[in-house]
Amino acid sequence: MLFDLTDLRLFIHIAELKSLTRSAERMHISLAAASNRVKELESRFGMRLLYREHKGVQLSPAGATLLSHAQQFMHQVEHLKSDMQEYTNGIKGHIRIFANTTAVTEFMPEVLGDFLRLRPQINVALEERLNQDIVRGIQDGTADIGITAGPVQGQGLEIINFSTDRLVLATAPDHPLAKHKQTSFLQTLDYQHIGLHEGSTLQHFLNKAAADSGQRLQLRIQVRGFEAMCRMVETNVGIAILPHSSALRLCRSMQLSLVELTEPWAVRERSVIIQQRQNLPLYTRELVDLICRCAPSA
Image (cartoon, rainbow, N blue to C red; front, side, top):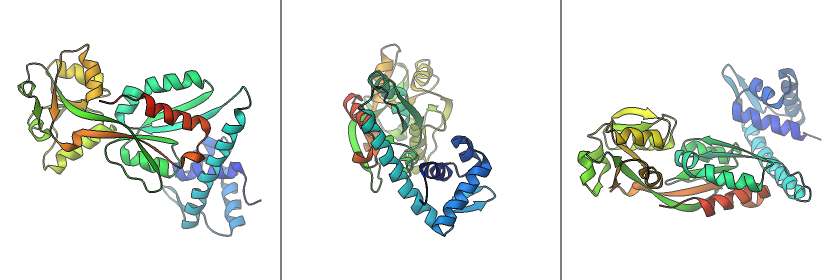
């Protein structure tokens, strides 16, 4: 046989981590064993699969082809395991999700709470990523489910629009912009903003929107979440832009004024991104359905 499942798992990790050493650690095997497995794969196929570089490893064209087939094969294996385990009492599995800021902080905790009560033996990894990294993660098999907001494209992927949200401006009640029902994003750039951390999808989007207009977002403070952001806004430290659904929830406990943004991009479609649905394990398909049913819409 040309390969076994350990070979494929190792090769997928190498492609993701760009490191033979870290891949061996993740597989709980020695570096020498990992290196020998790769050499044996290359010998069996009769071609180079990896380029060793001083900063790590890169896939050769043949390696990229092997990676694509390996990912599809492992998805099929997971699908088989999932369907067969339905006949036992000990269902186990793992789902990795790449999601935007709003999903991670706002609605996914509730969705995952419901899901894990139904599927207590499933492990879930939820990571906040930028939109382009989410799409790339689904394409290369690093993640099973992606959750994005705003326009997104991914060749060969299923993109399911499941709800709509709107970005709004939050200010203290006595702020000059609070008296307006609507305002443009450009008008907000005259004031100090409270922003999210640099790894945030939303902050990346707003920074780019300001740069595209030839201006710069004046960030007075950057925080880790919407609640901390709105605490700063409430005390008039600055203004902030956040999803309407999050702002409404926080208005219940804080004194905030919400102002609509007039830009068309303020209305954002939320989407679930997956590879071919029929190739996903049953429990992953169940979580996709739950996200689409339970996520709030503004």
